[in-house]
Image (tube, rainbow, N blue to C red; front, side, top):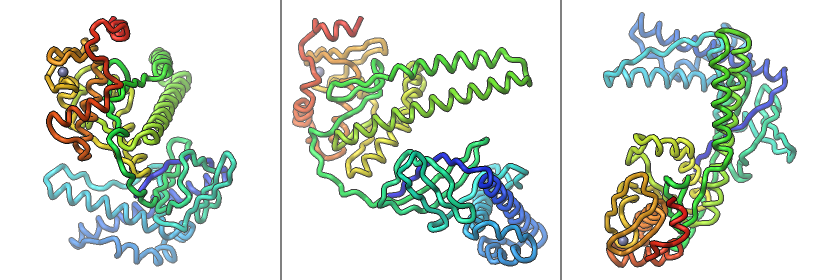
Amino acid sequence: MKRTGGFRLYPNNGQIQAIAGMLEECRWLYNWALDCRKLAWEHMKEHVNYYDQANLLPYLKEKVRPNLTGVQSQVLQDVLRRVDKAFKAFFRRAKSGEKPGYPRFRGKDRYDSITYPQNPAFRIEKTGLRCDKLVLSKIGAVRCRVHRDIPDDAVTKTCTISRSGDRWFASITYDVPDADVKEIISENVVGLDLGLNHLLAFSDGVFLDAPKWFRASEKKLGIEQRRLSRKKRRSKNRSRQRLRVSAVHRKIHAQRKDFMHKTSRSLVDSFDGVVMEDLRIKNMVRNHHLSKSIHDAGWNMFAGFVAYKAEEAGKHAVFVNPSGTSIECCVCGTPVSKTLSVRTHRCPSCGLVLDRDTNAAVNILGRGLDALGLLTAGTAGRACLNDLVTGAMIQEAPSSPVLAGREG
Ligand SMILES: [Zn+2]
């Protein structure tokens, strides 16, 4: 199973200079490789491939650009591979009749990352302290924060060092052994609905609301953005304020991601299977209210977290078509249409009264169990589903104080 982890790097000044120097050499090589292919094609109608260029590397180092020796050979080979990829994409686009866009030369400071394509040109040293070390060939040990642990039995594959403004990052891909798939029982599967009343509704009747800081951070962002709009153009104050706005953005992003990691972790720990709606099937973003909650939850990212954590644990994440799940009655299957403002599902034929999001979550669970082969079709399936969710249901209770209070 392949994974990628991103880590912040804290290189010292000497290391920054060393990496910047490497980026510059790589940029030179990139432009050289591009030029070489261009000339060969324009003058001789010849295609130059990756191997032709890789075989020239020793010559380049010795006769043309001695500084290239300061960069690890595999990193240089990766630069040539990038050029190769850019050309292949160019020809593919040209062939399929799209507007191709010739691969571009990279201007100064327009080359922002280098890739170590394999171990052992880099390795992680866990220090057990706040900062770990990433040991890079020709650069040395750079302080880094391995905030999401790479498991000890993982085999690291590639490492990309990149610059973003004045920050440095490492993106490391690694393989982890496949987990044994655990036996799954239907009682331990949960359905999730991206709710209207709540952020998430679970098929067992539990709700998850957006933490308060979602709104608080958003408010703060609004304030800082308004301040920015009032600053004079091209002034020092304005550029300072722009930094402040991007800091708030970064913080919100980090908060959300943290929340999603924690929520997905506890879901995967508590259940054998998680069933979620596949939002690609039905585009719900048309509705403003819905789009806001989808945006808030960063649903796709969250769903991705659940999926990979489940896979790692040998558990199941199932995506189902959500269409109709908010309308169907989860007990008898009768369609009960309701507008967005109707918060409660009331079934005229079986008398079920249930939060609309819970009803949808149970329907999603049903589809997931079906996909997992844990649900028999038809009425027997309904009955089996009912057994699973009785805890969530308030049947024949139109005057239930809980629901009455919620509706208000
Ligand atoms: Zn019903």
